[in-house]
Amino acid sequence: MKVTGVMLTFIDMPREAEAEFHEWYDLDHLPEIVGLPGVISGQRYQAADNLMQFRASKEGAPPIGEARHCSVYLLGDPDVAAVQARMTDLGKRLFAEKRMIRHGKVVFSRAFRLIHAYAAPRIRVSEDGRPHLRHKGLQVAMGSVPDPKDIPEATEWWHSSHYPDMLSVPGWAVALKCEPVGEEGQGKFLHLFLLDKAADQAHAELNKVLPEWRATGRSPHPRGIYRRSFSGPLSRI
Picture 1: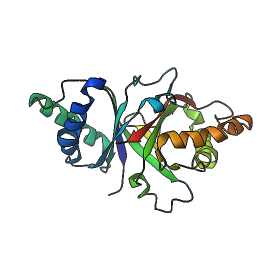
Picture 2: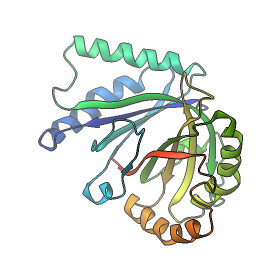
Picture 3: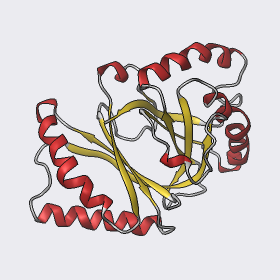
């Protein structure tokens, strides 16, 4: 099924409740969500201590903070907002049935429409197949283009420079570019990078080339029209 969007959720869970959380999510919560019409699949991620050093939050960042648990659901309905509504209704039903975990807090949950799926040259699958790529880790990046008239220039930079650079780094395989549902065209973007190396190894590879990109004006955008607000890697569970 063609992926039309993603649902991204971050959960702040106390460490002492993590074992119960994993059992509940795998045996109860995730199967219910994936069973909804329009939901293709779900995948869970976690940021261990060795990955938190790479997390960055700036002005305008979503309220993710130190939340270490993340879920990404691939959506296949063209009406992404309708899928989000079904997920919300399911949450209300599970809460009424007392099937929601007692610990932790959802600090961020948002539906995004998939705009484009880019891939490293070594990844030969079609664009429709790229979101399904088997991977070991995930890099979440969010930011904005404050002036909407700069979106075409930012898009050209992503397409011709930034994504090719990122996907030339060992371990960085696919980039999913998304916009928040209901705010399309307003300059807010989510970028999900699928990593086919362990997340810490992929970041070690990235750190080798970042100084050159900065010195040559390849990253960040040379005119500063794109402002990153949040970024951080996670390992696939």
